[in-house]
Length: 241
Image (cartoon, rainbow, N blue to C red):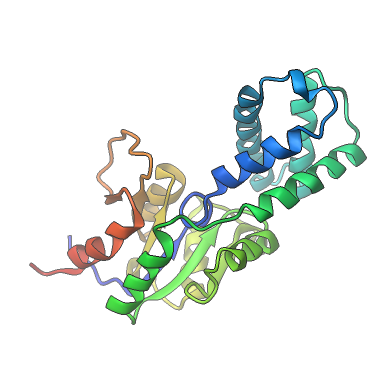
């Protein structure tokens, strides 16, 4: 498969920034501040927190909840399930503010990101690079800044800015417009097979699945286990040989 590749867009959370580790670290710290939490199985609570995050974010992206509303839903649901009380919005917001401070301080790029971006820009300086992410634009831009990725990835398109979210084709097309290219000229790399790689390909881009965990799945799309494999894969995809 030979393709003219002029641009490369990345997902953010789980692809460039280690959201799961940051969220787990922040939750472990913030939960200890909750009265009665000493008797809670913290690992079970953490797993449930992650489930609630995905559920609430899906509802936010579907327009069913505000960004603040999905945050409140996550913590009020969890503490009720853990038998830690019924919280009002004020108490939920106060707890989440503390959680957020810990979460932000734990933002880190994955170890393979900076070296891979450096290799890409050295080997293919003509590539136009950017980020396409679901989520609230202000928070996502702060995340990119704190992870030290702003210089390498100057363009960021967030679902809150454009009013549509992945896996809808429209957001992929808007991101291509933001870097001044046609979808057929752009590669999209993300850690979720359906929402990222498959959705990008359905929108006319070339989707690449970043399968860091080595999760078994049947797909004809290109797959990498680490971003270090990306430069060689792009060379293969653009080679006539």
